[in-house]
Every structure is written in C-alpha cells, then in structure tokens.
Length: 154
Image (cartoon, rainbow, N blue to C red):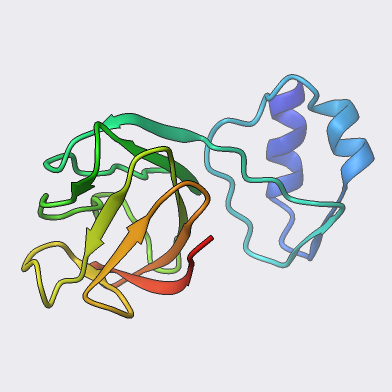
C-alpha cells in the first residue's frame, strides 16, 4: 500500500510538496530505496539528510568507486594511498547533474586529476585532492566526467 501511494504521488506533474512530518509518519520504515524521479518541482518542508550510504573501509589504490544511486561516500584507505584506478569513480549509470559528496576517513586518500592521471575522469581544481578525516570533496557528473564543485580541508 505504501509503494502505491508513492507511485500515485510521483505521477503528479504539478509541483510536488512533501511535508516532512507526514512523510516520516507514512514511511517510517525506509520503504523508499529506489530512485525517485519527478517531472515538476519537488519541495521538501523540512531537511534532506544524506547519511553515509556507502563506506569503503579498506580502500586500495586500484579500487574504482561505484556511486550508483549514492549521494554520500566515506573513504578510508588501508593506509595513506593515492588513487590510481582509471576511472577513479565509475561513470557507468551516472547521469548528468548527479552530485556526489566524498568525505575522508582515518587514513589519507589522494584523488588525482585527469591532467595528471589520464583516465581518472576527475576534473579537479588542483592536480590532486587529499582527503583526511572530515575533509570533503563534492563532485558533479557531466558528460563522461566528474567535476569538482567544492573542496573543504578540515
């Protein structure tokens, strides 16, 4: 029944307004786990929280991150590492405008720009970005590459 309600709401082409209290009451058991698309505006009266929905706890330099359907990734290397995988972040199933937030864990992880590591498919604001605990790299996908939107060195 809950999925039927969601389907009915998503088929509305007018602006979609979701009240957080109602949404929480109706969908308190994480019913929505697939992609949701709306052709009109989506307004959330409340906050949108991106919990770490993917954690790499023993990342190696040859790992390709796979953010399919993810928004927030925590990376933690097996020690200090420089990513050498090509591509570094998968573009398979990525869609133009998809954003991705990556935050560092206990060990240093370096992400390398396409100009330095051919095939990384990362267009960064510097030749590399180093993520330590709490550092944040925000990217957006467009036309086959991940572009840096912001970097915070905490």
